[in-house]
Each structure stands twice: as C-alpha cells, then as structure tokens.
Length: 279
Image (cartoon, rainbow, N blue to C red):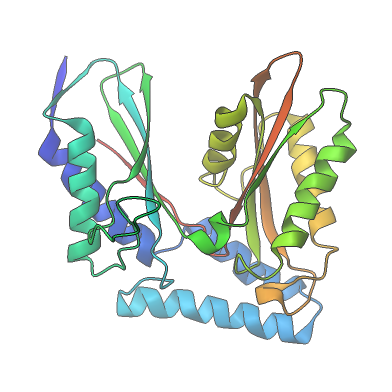
C-alpha cells in the first residue's frame, strides 16, 4: 500500500489550476493556428490570428488566457493500492482555493445557486472520482467557463432515432449557441449511459487531446461527420462568419438501456482548458 499525503494532492491541484488557466494544451493551440491557414473568410483569419496572439501573450505575461477562469472541474483516478493520509476532497478544494487566490485568478463560484454569495476562493470544485488499479493518483483539472457551459444541451432520444438525428441535434446545438460560447468551439458529445452519466461523458470528452480520434472507427467517422456539418453553419470565429465554427468534435459513448438513447452536448470555447499530473 502506497501512502500519499493530502498536502501533496493540494499542492498538485494548486499548480494545475494556475497552469491550466495560463497555458492552453499544445494540441489545441496548434489546431487554432492550423485553422487560420485553411480559413477562407478574411475577417475570420484575422480573428484567428488575434486568438493565437492572445495565447502567446498569456504565456509571456503569465496571466490567464481568458478573464473567465471557470469553475474547477477535477477528474481523479485513484489507484486501489493508494492510501491517502487525510481528507481527499478537502485536499482538492484547498488546492483549488490556493490556486485561484495565490494565482490571482478570478473567483466565480457562489456558495448557493439562489442566494448568489461568492465563496471568494472558487471552491467548491466539481470532483469526479474513479477507483482504478495501481498505486498512483492521476489528477486532471479542467477549468470550465460558463459562456460555453451555458450553451450545453441534452436530449433523451427515442431508441429508434437514426444517426442522422443525432448529428442534426449536435449541429443545431452549435447553431443555437451562435457566438455565445466564443467560437471556434470544441464540442464534447456524450452518447449513452443514463441522464447524468451522458452529461459526464460529454464533459470528459472535452479533456481529450483534440488531435486524437475516438478509438472506435465508427465513432471516429461520426466525429468527423459532425465537425464537417458544424463548419457549414458560417458562425465562424467569434461569430463573425467563416468556415471555422468548430475546431474539433469528440464523442464518448457508453452502454445504455434498451428504452433510451441519451445524447449530451457540452460546449467548450476556443480555450477549452485542461491540465493533468500523475502522483
């Protein structure tokens, strides 16, 4: 049994919160840069260049990529041969608190959804924990801004729905969102499971490297089909038109009930942030 102190988890989460808000994943940064080369709209190309310049400025000045530093979403895979010395969730939330306060990141969490009083340290985080084999802990921090989160949708399809119906729903979701989620967007799609797990799949999909396709060829092809359809919408970068409305579509699928076909769309803005570390 491997012992890991809660303080170690706190320190890792603190650093990941800061790094995720300052550095965009390299694969996504490259995708934005590459999309400028294929964008046909002159204004859209200029906007994509501005977005790229913004990413580089954030790195150079060590400031957040976006003013909305998000609600901290934590995906934790905990090895079954690990014993944590202390309270795991308390350690994670302390790390989020330190990261946002010491990193001078905007604190955007209210302690109650109706009373709306700010907690002043961006806690509590949304924590998803999974037990896995081994003696390590893998932590992934995904700050989620709500300009994009608010544009997310879910639909409980009839199991007789066709693939084309799902593609149309995803495309419609991006069209309805328009410029609100700061396009070009990254689209996470969850298919299957039940009501809440489908939404989880869509959120988890946004943490995948955008250059990596679904390992199932059927879903990999469906990702490309959805991306192609979305990019005919002419929403474009920041909503000013163009053929770069989405940078990537990522699908995660899971078994479901014979009577259902849940589909969730979790929208990610052009700065779909995530950073991970294994302890």
